[in-house]
Image 1 (tube, rainbow, N blue to C red):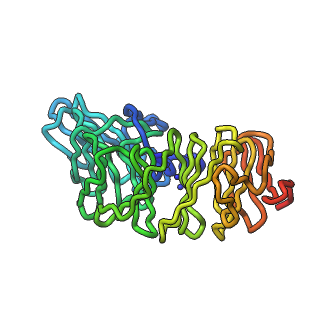
Image 2 (tube, rainbow, N blue to C red):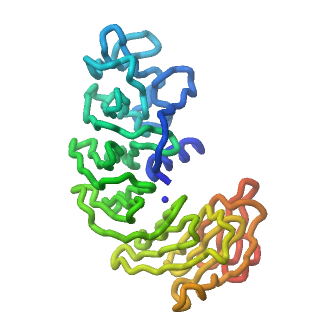
Image 3 (cartoon, rainbow, N blue to C red):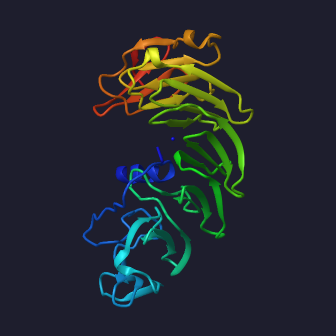
Length: 331
C-alpha cells in the first residue's frame, strides 16, 4: 500500500492512509464554498464551515458561510495574503495551512492551533506531504528534508527519518508505520517514533507497491523494476522473486492468499507463485500459473476469495479464475 474508506471517499481516504511524493498545493472545491472540508463522510463535516483569511487584521478564522459569523479565531498575526489551505483531515477536525513555507495544523472543533512545521514540502492531493492515518490520530509531515510523526491527541512529535517516504502505511493493529524511502524499507513504532525494524534496501525503483496478507503477518513489496519481496513480519525472514520475465511492466495489483502460500500479481494478465515450493535459484522461480491471460483489460484489483479462486476487477467487469489452472470459473 503510493502515499496509499462513497467511491470517491474510498479513493481519497486510501490516498491519505498510504501515500507519497512531491507537488504543489491543490484543494478541491466541489460545493462552491472555498476552503471548507469536502469530506462529507467525516464525523465533524460541516458544509458551511470554512477557513477565511482576514487580510485587514492578519487573522485566520473559521466562519459560517450561511451567516458570515465567526466561529473561531484560529490564529492571529499571520501573513494572511500568503496563507493557503493545504488539506483537511478525513474526519474534518484538523486543518492544515501553508504560511510562508511553514505548515500549521489547527483543530477546528476546539478552535486551537496545534503544531507548526518549518519548510514543509509542497503539497498535492495524490502525492501529499501531510498524511493522516485511518483514525485521524496520527499524522506524518515532510518538512525540511525530514519526515515527522505527530500524535494529534497527545501533541507529541517524533522525527523519523532524514528523508521523505515514497510509500507509507499506518498499521493500527500493531501500532506501526510501515515505510519505503529511497534508502530502505523500515517499520516505526507509532507510540515512540522508534525504528523497530529495517527491512533493508529493497531496490524497488519507481512506483513501489505494498500489500499485507489477510492475517497481517506477511508483507509483500513490488515495483516496476520487476522484483517482488515477501517478508514475514514476525521473523523478518525474506523471500525474493524476480518477476520480470513473466510480466509486462504494468503490475498494478497483487494479493496474498489467506494461508500466505500463494502470491498473485495482476496487470494485463495474472501470474501466481507458490511461495512454499519455490526453486532455490531466483531465475527459475516460475509462477505456478504461467502465461495466464486473465480478463481482457488492465486489472485494477485482484484478491483471493477462497483457497482456489481469484477475483479480478477491470474497468469493464469482475471475473473469477481458478488460480492453478487459469480457467475462468463462476463465483
